Image (cartoon, rainbow, N blue to C red):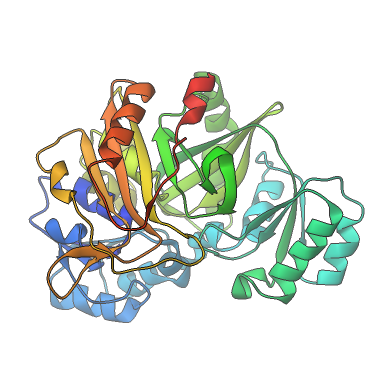
Length: 424
């Protein structure tokens, strides 16, 4: 079969690598792709948000199955466009992708169906938001309602910071129209854990756990980014936590979406906080996480196409989802200055060091070919260096060793990815 993957980052590279191992697949296309994805797929110069052009391409080229990977095209309704043309696409329809597309919607859903989450209020009026903040204890969390590249969340330590946050989000439109509605949420403490799942509308199958590092600098300092590294599994995701979440969070979310007439097929990413009062939902994503995908998929034993087809066809209950009993760590190599200002077009050396190494992966996040055919930097997050190991400590050591194999002029990384492993 022919498969089209929509997107062009590290997540899509990890998906493409998993798809390339499927016995069912003979040809992979990726739109727009990147320099790393080009090694295993034919890259197509169509943007991820150009739904009609993508569907036309799929139709003309006999694409059997399309994977819509990023959040923006899912929330915009790309799957609906494909289905309207009779094309098979993996991912939630627009009315289900709202689970990620609107934080206010997802918070209201959790309240309605008694799914554990932080206390909150939604606001469309900045003055009303500030008046409410004056009654709150600090710290407090402000969230732009819509998509904001994983950066639309502000943790405010005092009232002045919170008032300034309202101004940034609602008045200055730092995150664009995503800030038209503001969610004000109580600050939760505990361990953060990411759990990905496959969903077919009624059945949910949980993948292995992971833990992301969002801040730009060591010791969780600096600005929020799209993610500077991750590890899997999380030692804090115990059997007890798993049992609780399956009963009170995972299946209830799937059932709630179905009850609302928003049947969800695709990936639900559960961002969890393990609090003293038990696990609570921090956020939902309607797609694979980035860089969580880079540590989860290399550990999955199943044929990813078979699992995704089961999600689309409503037969996920027949899939026995299995993961290797090992660990993975991903360290993101970024351009110095990310997430604000950074240079592009810098030549990357050492990529061939990953050739023929089964336990080491170099996932391209922001790369392209220059006119001379060299692989150069083309984004804030450039590469995701991922390594497997028998346990988390060995995987972490392997990943950091592998970061030394690659070089480019303004290479930057955190040095404490997986530090929480040492604190068990």
